[in-house]
Length: 279
Image 1: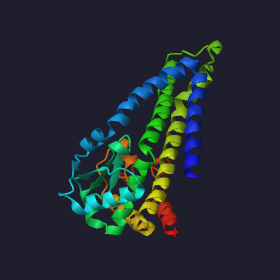
Image 2: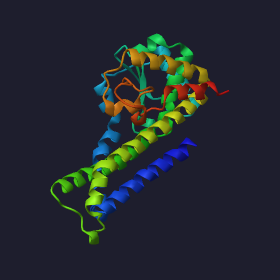
Image 3: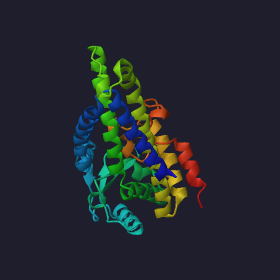
């Protein structure tokens, strides 16, 4: 169900891109905006592990330095039938975790110091299995595709805004939509693209919850972890870059910063309810 939803949302983003490309600049506008967005997101996808780990001062841990954590990641990876990712610890009291890397052979699982202090072994296993599922499901690639499509939409919208300001409309013969098309693109298209992109992110979170419960065999462990992480994130929000919020097990930012509509994560209550209903 969530895989189909992801495909439909990506299709909707593509359709939105083609629609606004037709309203402003025709085929050439779409190609130019898509090319720029792809270039911008290529670096993020290819070097994501270095960028994010540097941003949060993550430190790679060897099997000797963190034997219990490493053994847990290793056992879960073997159960999932995937290569063992590198293991990092991020300094900070806010409990959370994330996975990064462009594919299974270049993957990283990172946990904060805080998460190691408040979760029991079943809960930590659930979180690690959730993050391994993100890697196995190629969510970094899917997120980059969604970001590229949304970025192209927003670039076209920016072009439309300046065209409207300077009174430049696209020619009907070029497939443009005139001033109405410009207003639509400048105001509505970026909002629609962002909502669809957030929808993709939320559907992948549900899939990672399902996969994490399956790999660990302990859905109650992941449910308990999400409950603890949610409370802790509200009491002690992480100093996180909003552009990376979608990568974490739970939204690292306070709910005061984002409405549920624009959240990269589904409501925590629904995630816990789904997990506790599993057998």
